[in-house]
Image (cartoon, rainbow, N blue to C red):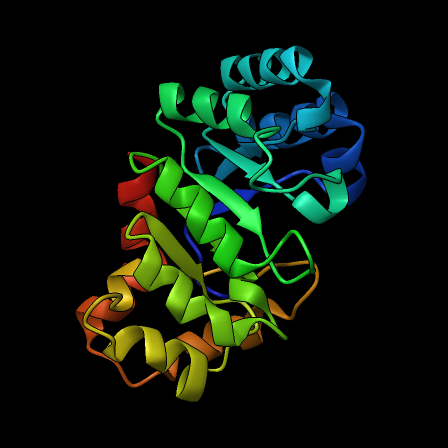
Length: 218
């Protein structure tokens, strides 16, 4: 973060913790955030199959400083539209949390079903993790048009095709695009360079690089 000039970053538990060891993962990221002097902002995870226990785990993580919800339908084994995740979304809505949903893995973790879910929860802000990378990039812009409370994630997406479609579309715009490195699965310097090289107005770039996410967290 220091080397790349990143002031603050959101962090989430790893894949094992997302799928199974929710408590251990939440404890790890909230402890790291508490020790960071405000530079790290933690997501909380809970497997929706745990039902009431999942909501209780989110409440516990909130008490430890979590500020947002992250779900992964592929890792956690559920369909976005079957109602299983709804209690977690209700908790996020009550808490004022944005919701990150990783996309790109068929059949359940793809952009258009996420857009349908977002329309069911119009007061919740959803971040479309990875924006369907890579096979489902073609669905990312239609999903954003379908649900105005859905936001795109920049990771992996080339600016000259995918990101520029978002920016030039009057129904979307750069204000609904959120920068993500998706570390440790990418090279953060390359992800950042793609945004700094993207020929968009400075105000739009500032929104992508943190302004929009700050607004969602607040």
